[in-house]
Image (tube, rainbow, N blue to C red; front, side, top):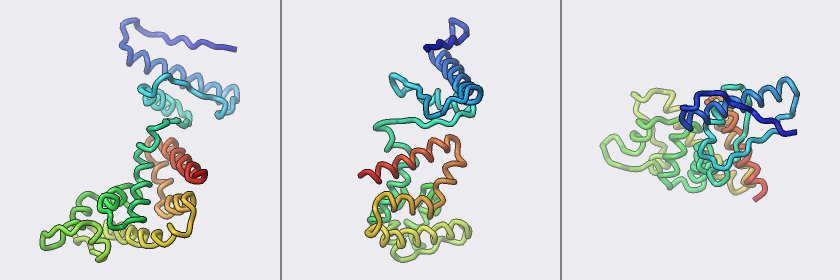
Amino acid sequence: PVQVLVTGGDPDYSQALWREREAASLAAYIRHLLAAEAVPAGHIAILLRKLTSVQVFEQALGRAGVDFYTVKGGGFFACPEINDLLWALKAILDPYDDAALAGFLRSPMAGLSDEALLALAWDQEGNRRGLARALAAGAVLPDWLGPAQQARWEKSQNLIKEFAGLARRLYPAEILEELIEATDFMPLLLALPGGEQKAANLRKLIEIARQA
C-alpha cells in the first residue's frame, strides 16, 4: 500500500526549510517502522532524484538515531576516508611520492600534525629535503613536537616498510583489511560524526577490491 506523509508548516517557508522538515518527517516515520513495526532495515530505501539534498536527509536520519548507508555513485571515491586509504596505498607502493606520503601522514591513519610534516620536510639547517628523504633517513622529530608525534611518526615508518613487502604477496582486498586493522582506522571513523556511513564506505571499498 502507498502511504503519504504530510509535512505541516508555514507556506512562506523557504524551499530549504521545507526540505529539512520533509527529511525530519521521513526519518521519524522510518524510526517508527523499525521500532514499532519491526520492518527490516534492509527493506527500506530513500530514492532521490539528485544527491544535492542528500546531506539534509543524512542529518535527519542521524538525529533520529537511524543507521543508514548512502550509495553515492561516482562521488564515492571522493569521500575523505576513501582518499585516506588510497593515499596510504600510494605511499606504501611508492615511498618516494611526497604527495602520497603527506596525504597518508596527515590522515587519521597516521595522525601527524601539520607542524610535524613541516619539520620532516625541512632539516635543522633550514634546507628542504622532502618527506621521502626524511623517511629514508629515519629522521627524528624535534623535541618540542612531543613524544606522541614522534611515536606516530615511528609507527608510520614501520607500517610503510612492513606493508611494502606485504603488498606484493597479498590480494588488494587483503591489503586493505590488514591496513585498516593495523592503523585502527575503523574505530577511529566510528567515533566521528557519521561514522557508520564512513565505516560502510570502507567495507564497500574492500568489496570492490575483492571483485576486481
